[in-house]
Image (cartoon, rainbow, N blue to C red):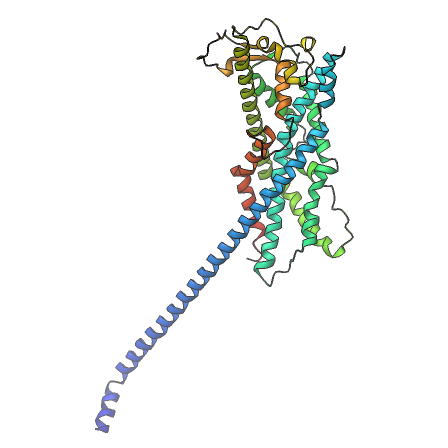
Length: 408
């Protein structure tokens, strides 16, 4: 029996070896595949969890960023109104002084300067905060996501980094921007008579000219040279040498981002859309003025007289001071008969510049106010910039870049 079994194994030894190799190899291959599949599943699970954790952190960063924007927009609005106040001019106009023509000219410059300043400054503030908060969020995520991360950022560094933007609101950056805008407004509007009638197309052309003039300053363009207005020329000395290297790195990275072509494009797009919102608001106010004039007079609109300062009576408000001649300042390109059922083509309406000035002044007479209903122009601008897709995409790209470790 034993000899027979041994002879059998000897005769079929080759077959047993091949079978053993095949079976063993198959078993090893299955174990290898199972381990690889398990590793892949674990890696995918880790990546998914990390992605969800990063997404949650990004959404939290975006909410914080939006809240920062809202809080600082209120401060920005107050600063612009303080720099471009029309209260003294209004008070002097109520007294019907002998130099009212000069006062109206100054009102023209201040009103359009303030409107333009809101458009540019709001866009710059939103873009800058979107970049700063996402740079900060990226560093914070890296510090918490990996124990091997060398860069650790503390609360003191976060505060010092965010305080850099106070240069714009408190240390002269906004004043420099307003001076640039006013110089261009004066240059373009100096020769525009108060009696000149403007259509919406003319107002759009005026805003386009202002935008081109402001952006033509190669060294002062607010869109491509935001750093000139938003941030100090060098990092302030806080007396904390341990924090200087990281703060300097973040400061330099922020400067590079603000001067990049993508950021310039986003800011320029915001400014263009901001002027479009301003034209829409002016059109709505012009329509309301015409409607009120029709209701109050009940006659065919005429364009025989212009709203010039010499006809401006005393009142408690600039808009009220010119309301008595409302029907004489809105001249359609073709005659518009008074009818309760008629529809006015606002694009065909022309209005004297002296009547447009109170409208423009009133649009920005108050700063950001989230509770205003309907929203005033500064509030609409801020909300529009916050939800603009290009701004949100910019923030996401910045966060993605800075939340990923360099060696990843």
